Image (tube, rainbow, N blue to C red; front, side, top):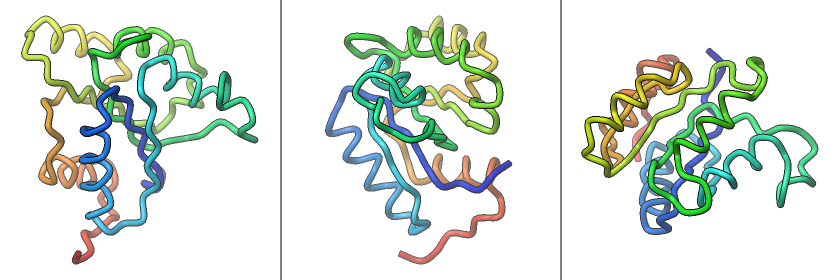
Length: 145
């Protein structure tokens, strides 16, 4: 697994994005955080299309937190497009469905996507962040804040 350098938040709620970015920054690991407000924006970011067409290369976030319920393109529509990306572009990317949905069908549907590593409930917590880092990037040690 490559080093944890970049996290992509895909959520239409600006307060949630602000909070999640703040939590990530509190880790003190110098991780870059990018934000997309819907699934279509997320795919455009990853493929350097749309408003991201001027990027020199495809961004490669190591971790994606993906909401389900969003306008324009929801989390499911994002996953349908994401699964079509080249395997090398998706390699070593951890996708976490982070949602307020309590619908057990959503959890079951998420488990049907091989690219979804975990289904978790909002809000993001420091405990979940540390658990994910420990599981996927064990070389990181938490720095005091």
